[in-house]
Image (cartoon, rainbow, N blue to C red; front, side):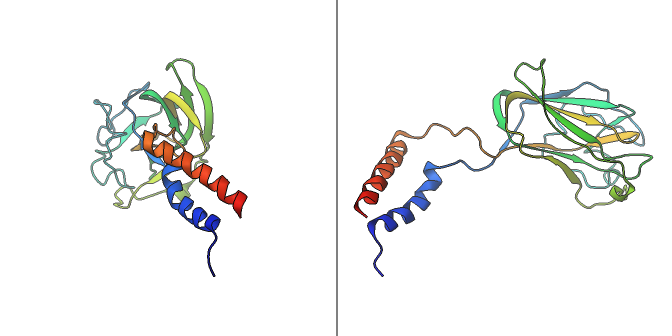
Length: 213
């Protein structure tokens, strides 16, 4: 059966829509971050003097002791730890994933998380919380070499320069590894002039073909 001109146009639009339509999800990387509570030492020290361990792309394992705790940033008996990420300019943030782990309820325990946004780093707007009830079902052997899990907060739809990740302890120790930010619908970059004309032309062509069909 012969396709109509409109059907041909629709097929072409599906392909060209990749260029004229919505941008794909992207990773958003902070410029820097800080936290308001001192890190601590136990079996080893879990400091982050260069403020890089949460965004350096180096992952620990589910067992925090498997590599002498090197990849983990840790706090002990701190009810809330605020980690403030600076993106340098306003950015779109739709999802945050916080790497963490737990060995037992008397030691390292997965925290609950709240997230806030700010344009000036002073006044904060609450976005979302993820409450994690303390449970031994989350226990992992401290020397496990399996990948660690992430706490995920989705659908944030935030546009801000600063994002605060507040970790609320559920046990003596709170450990964090990588903190990842994703924009699912970022503000698209300005299109090249020729691509803009192409998209406009396609829209006009579609309207004309619909009238003729």
